[in-house]
Amino acid sequence: MMHSALRTLMMVVSLLLAVPAMSYASDQLGKVTFPTSCSASVQADFDRAVALLHSFWLEAAGKAFATVAQADPGCALAHWGTAMVKLGNPLASAQSRKALEEGWEAIQRAKAASPRTPRERDFIEALETFYRDFEKVDHRTRALAYEKAMERLAQRHPADREAAIFYALSLNMTALPTDKTYANQLKAAGTLEKVFVGQPQHPGVAHYLIHSYDYPPIAAKGLTAARRYASIAPAAPHARHMPSHVFTRVGAWSESVESNRSSAAVADQPSKLHAQDYMVYGYLQLGQDAEARKVIDEVRAIPVINMQHPLAFASGYAIAAIPARHALERGQWTEAAALTLPASEFEWRKWPQAEALVVFARALGASRAGNAATARQDLERLDALHTALVGMKQG
Image (cartoon, rainbow, N blue to C red; front, side, top):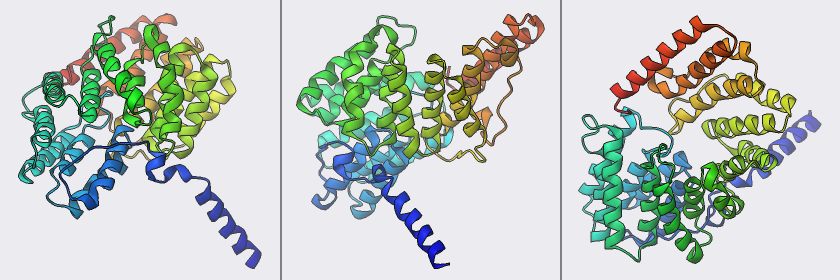
């Protein structure tokens, strides 16, 4: 029994030592300096919270901003940070109603805390434009209003690097996928590249540069940021994953697989699923179907989906996309035509765009398999999902 207890203790210790990336030490999250009028005693904690935010480590960032607000109730920007967290991944999908409500409430707390400087008021008022009238105004209109407000903020505070970085992020939020000149993305990248020279360890700069170049025709421009981001913020699971966006675009499949294997090893559920989605795609491009199947089996064995996570959408996207990719990339049309929504606790009605991945793949499989009737039914379902999105003001 003593030997058994000792082995158990050694296993626990080894597991704890195996995950140093979960530490919030500033040197593992990159270097962020965001001056505030808050108490000097919370400034370092605030900077760490912003570093977490820049790497989309949202649950940790939310807790960090809440801790700052509790320690210094007059720190208006701590509530701004909470409202930023409620955006989720602002480049992935529109926010849920609950997130919008909570974001609006955080903005009101920020204003009630009486921000002490014009710069702080500008940050809060800019974000307020995104949340204002969310029940009446569609997502894109509010996102465009936020982008313009951030542009004005950056112009009013030209020496403020954080203003420039968050403005670049807003440009990516409003970039149209139909614009093949990549005007917004390249404008954002131009700003970020300049900041990167002076702040080579800033996690947000590397992160948002990868997003700015996340398109095949311009992806090679993002290789420098891609090969540096994970070393800038190794504690952040998303920083380990994001380089694979560029690796995927340029066909660096082995680098993509390794990037996502590293991320999946330390990530929470939604981020791990996102990494596994990229891993499956990378394995398929390498012709390593057996390795892809191992990841798919692991995903199918997940017992519960965390619907309360700020990035819950990523879970649904991944568990819908992974089997769809597996069928389509192998040209298995009958398999694709038989796809169904994975049995899980994911609330598909909240994100019709996630369900649409399955429906589209099934329609394509049915078409290739010669089953026009099923394909037609799925086209009708896609129309219904589009209508649902419009009704949710996510047109």
